[in-house]
Length: 318
Image (cartoon, rainbow, N blue to C red; front, side, top):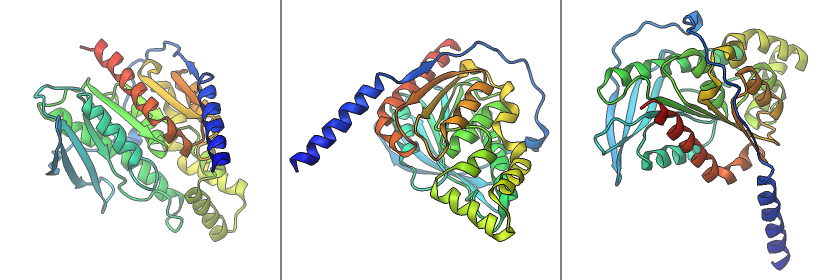
């Protein structure tokens, strides 16, 4: 028992020592010009009437469940709105979750920001983007409609009296970070954004990721079509090109973005995060001494940096 405790202490000391080596890069200032709408993410604006159910009454905020039909028929969008009781009009932060599993990471951030006085809207997954039987085109459709549904949600928010269009922020985690990176490039009403454990070059991520669900997806497609890994990458590159954040990265404003990367990430490898960072104009970038899943050990640090990022940028827009 004493030996196990000693090993744990040594690991903890090593982690703390590594934190001292955590790298932060400040952005190269490059304000974007006005860009035309990207046709691939165009949609017809309509009145969104979500079903709203109040679930919980916390000390400083209410939690409401929102559901409405997705633009990708026949699915439905589900989100949880943490609405402050202050009666003011604070910024609203949209939170996009990880690919699979529970919602611990996004719930924790949503509650933390709500306690800090922000209005937060935490999305759940509309459908699984990695269904091998439906192939890569299904994955592309899920990402494209995810962006469209996010834009429709912003329509609904800005049509209300509670939200101002220039006071909308975004947080994305893992697969949600890829969607978040794409969203800030597509939707000009989104301001400050935090991209946690994301990356660019979706085809390369699908080809190289060690995440179990991605590996199964990749292998089933390869076996079903009788293709090699190289051929899988080639097909993924063709299909996923319209929804890859690298394709539109020049539209992003690096001053608005805060990125977090796990230096030893095997799910979304470090090199793909670095490619996105460069393509987006080298925004503020925090490299953590973790892998993908072990980044949860730094969750308190991550959420505090996110809050400070929003405080600074929304404060400038007052």
